[in-house]
Length: 165
Image 1: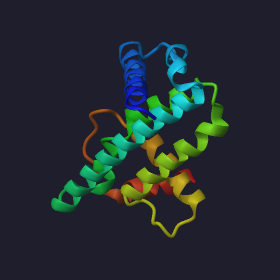
Image 2 (image 1 turned 30 degrees about the vertical axis):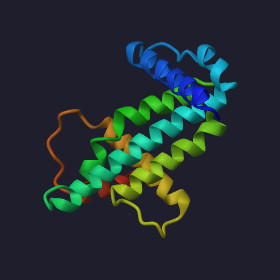
Image 3 (image 1 turned 90 degrees about the vertical axis):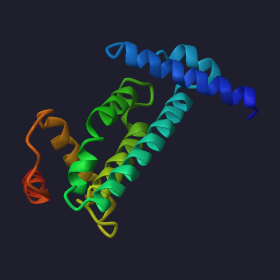
């Protein structure tokens, strides 16, 4: 890929994301960016890559803060960065031509990342179990009131996770 291609792809991604920010209820403008990416799937994969890089960076910062300050719980610090962005990403995939069969593994990967980072799952757990815990965790985080009182610790959340199984 040449530098010109790189900049055209970057600008197309930024245009799609800017449209999504300004018009959250509208479909993403795939037709315009398809000329640069070739297919809607390639565009969505590039958007997902950009998203996962940002999410991974924010997870790293949240984990570093939790490690530095014993008052900060991993489960809470990860919860602050998960809800809105992953929901928007999931909606973009769901409304696309990719459908659940292609987008599912990408979204499940995000769920596993968040479950492991929050300390709710361990690397030796099965992939299916980590995914289930991550999906449940995200559902709980999204359902929580925006300005709820701080959680008393992960035990209450784990009890809710077990009850939802």
